[in-house]
Length: 159
Image (cartoon, rainbow, N blue to C red; front, top):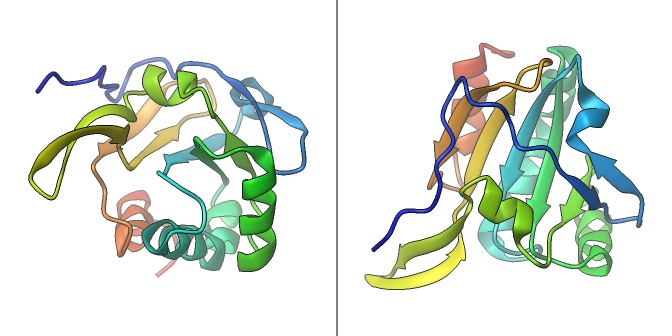
């Protein structure tokens, strides 16, 4: 099994410009000067991805108050993301990367084990990008459940 590119704390965050669920373009550069939580998830509307997105939604005020913007990225098309955002009342940007270019640049797409088999797919991952565009946290293969709570503890947000 070959490992994809892996980003580490201290690396410059690869810039991107992607469409959001409403068809607007969003760039990482738009958030220079602010800290950004960028998380990659496999598919809008699936149980694990819904749990993770709702955890971010439920803790968004705490993250925003601490200076963090949240961006979710998946290979879904904007229309599917719009339905997901509406159904789950998600109020942070969901970005579409259907050709998986950004997912691949961030090491969030590649070979992974799924039920003991090696498959190509989205590697559930979360990053924190500092205001200067440097990665301060890089986590691969995170769990959908409990991940946001751990991130809040690690960032010393809330609680």
